[in-house]
Length: 220
Ligand SMILES: Cc1cc2nc3c(=O)[nH]c(=O)nc-3n(C[C@H](O)[C@H](O)[C@H](O)COP(=O)(O)O)c2cc1C
Image 1: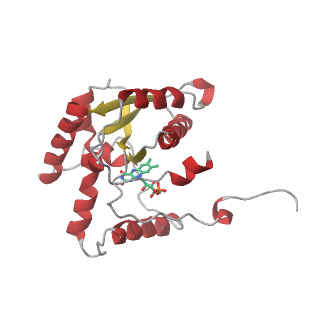
Image 2 (image 1 turned 90 degrees about the horizontal axis):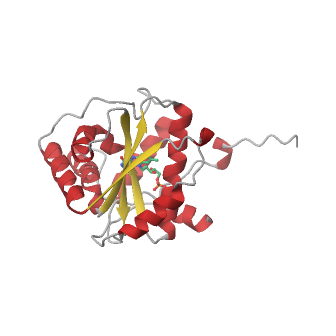
Image 3 (image 1 turned 45 degrees about the vertical axis):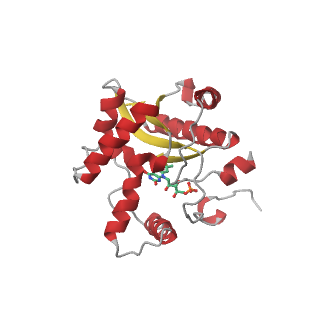
């Protein structure tokens, strides 16, 4: 379990080795045992592979190339003004991510190109799209987060890697063209799934010291 947690990271380069359908079914069947308040199980998952995924990547790629504006937001990815310490953590993440690719802070074009890889699922041959009913509140969104983490850890147990992607929400209408989800659903995120391409360079992200995020109240 510790190994799965330690080795999971947002992988942004996959080989074209296919992910067998039975592996995905095994992972998603097990992940269904994730907890949720009153057992609502508020996640709605679509799995895309093969031709339909290729079609989605192509349609999204066209929008990126055309400089299409993003679809209207159904939820805000981040607070408009990110305060400390989140602002600094986000800046540090951006710095780590792009310096690993040899991209400087000033090179906006290269940054845009790297970001555009999101809509190619970083080359992954499989992806899931996670929806939630728009009636659901914050506790149910948290349930969905737990579910997605369970999926990602189980993928590690299968030798697979993943990258959760809110980026897909900005092209949610293109995703909907392929999936035809019912109107009552909101696309929270996509998740690329596959085998890691070890030739793609990356830097391991860091974490805040425990004392910044955890308080023990034990009377000592
Ligand atoms: C809900 C969620 C959405 C994310 N969206 C994206 C995304 O759109 N594109 C991307 O490259 N990474 C995305 N990430 C990955 C985060 O950047 C990554 O988890 C974080 O920087 C920590 O790094 P690690 O997962 O490699 O440990 C997302 C992560 C989460 C949990």
